[in-house]
Length: 616
Image (tube, rainbow, N blue to C red; front, side, top):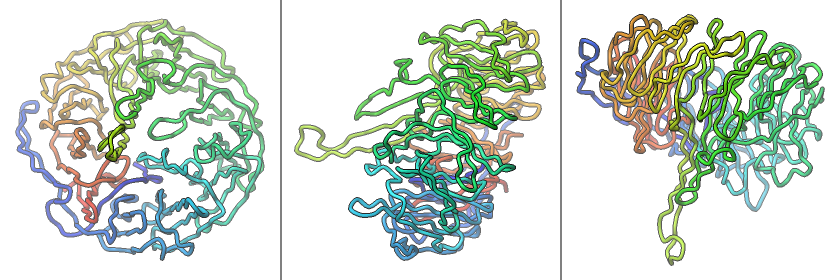
């Protein structure tokens, strides 16, 4: 998993002796749950080393690259970097590392390069009564690459929109293909070299932050879509959203185009809800529908207007729900992304505000409507569509993503002489909405329904398509297989017999399908549905990762963060890490990071860090 750009209120791990993991609190398992015909015992991960940061490491704590990458730990005022053997490479206070004496840094992020053996640590020192300062540190050696006081208002003064999502800020975009930063200012845009801060070009004709970009290496051109960032919102006058293509070497605008729609941002991540795809000579903008442009001159070719996701104005279930202390919640990933083929694009349309949806097929050259499927009423989400031969498989129902800002007030509160404090927690997780779930197979020629199945309870897993002939899908307690051409049910397995809880996802694993459940995994043969194994009970499973063929299950319920390594062939637990730290990679949660090759887990708590081997 590439973590080129990651960071923000985190902690990390790495260094010391060879022993069983302690900081990560590796747990022995009392194995023995029946799996298929036999039982298993769980193993232990082995600690490679343990070490300590020189600083608190309570802001950033992440590792770069594979298991031979560096480990970075920062607090507001200092940083420590360890090598892959847990030895300190460098450490220091920002005020001595930087020539502009950057001190308390309200926001920091790291960009890893060269397989995690180097990169950039970007520091922001937003001064209330002075000039804002930024500095960029070379992660490999701790030396300042450059600093500047020329770029102001890069982060919101009230910090209200800074959260633990871990990414770049809105006003600074790293262009990896050019090893450069695009920095938005109230009166224009600047491109600077990442290594030196040297200004490559500036323009007053481009305003706002880069929401999304596509780089054309052959022509050294960038197509980008801009929007008004929070930090500069009140400072930019007469701003209009821009879709444009520029010469990356000098900032010359080659064309600009108008587009329809309003750019919204996700509640927690603050990522703009849009996308850009370049296919041949066409640029597809996914925003309030699909808008298609000629990449050479910016001419709009065709468009289909529809809502890309259900937003707060359309359904009371999603309405920025105010809870205790002003908590907010929004739901995303309810509609499938467009499905492209060489000659067509398939779109899930949100037809009305009454939860009616259907699928449309459009000619990719002209946008002409080729067919529309039957309307599906009462469908809150339709998150997946696939093309399998002459069938279009449609999944009705399934997981949605919930983003939540939870505010808890403690202390005196309103009307009290005491003082109250507010704790803010940012959450991103999957959940289900009660609806009628189903599976549809549409005829690719005319969009008519060939067959459908609605044998699913309150939930339905994603589909797995095997060789365009068979589809596998489950619900909480059952696991099914269907012949795609005819809809004939090939088998129905009682997944509840595996005793690993309700299913919520499926993994395509060679000749098997592995069903991810709330208390573990169960593996079934694609041929006949026979169960290969069920894992030990692993309570509270809410997510899974496949990192270079290494599989992990996660439990972040009840303020825990537990990572289990799983042998997918046998169902055995390789080992378990329970973090007691705060921070960590935003990908893996508090106190945990995992190398890009999946071979090492880093666990940490405060200054302590530990490197753990996944495969013995």
